[in-house]
Image (cartoon, rainbow, N blue to C red; front, side):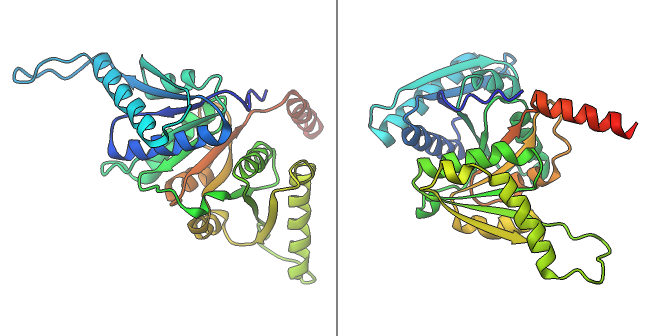
Length: 299
């Protein structure tokens, strides 16, 4: 079941770090574009480290202080009527952010470089969060800065149901930014090609896949300038090349507690130099019924 509400506040994780302040800047910008409230969330654990020479501080007190500083930063940056709310909650990052974003239109988190963990391992945590959240998750790199490219969106599609919600999010975001949308589809060439197969064959097949995935959305958003990019290169490599010239990369993912079957999405989170929106697809009853019929037919 698709539980993405497509409305509500913009929720952002805050941690008080320099990279976290850039993430907060991005989230406040998104809230202003959407005319939505901004919710600042600070998870914490109730087991602080204690040293005899350092006064004991409550983790909840530290979280509240981080939230106050973050709210003040938003006021300095935006100085507008943006409504800001704060939430501090004890528990794991995954659980706290998932609960806070239950009624959100989007959840914004940071992609911080951890010298002790490779990028792919760090990306898995944000991918797990995207799989459990009921809204799209935008992962912002630590070196993000505003740029004129913010208006350009690129979405990768594969012709499966995973692409459906990602395409919708891409069109909606491009419309909100009065920008343009590029759709990338990587057509996987079979290991052994028939002798009669030429370049036009795979282009026709790839074009058909893209047309089926985009059906209806280009008509609903006629003001969004649409570009179709067909390729036989690995989709992550294409997105990595294009992300230098766009403000957001959008990809789909499996919804569920263990999204370990999304290597392309995980690599996209780890390797892109611009923010990445991960839009999880929640299986619909019609898709479940079709899957049961396919299994029964094979049996």
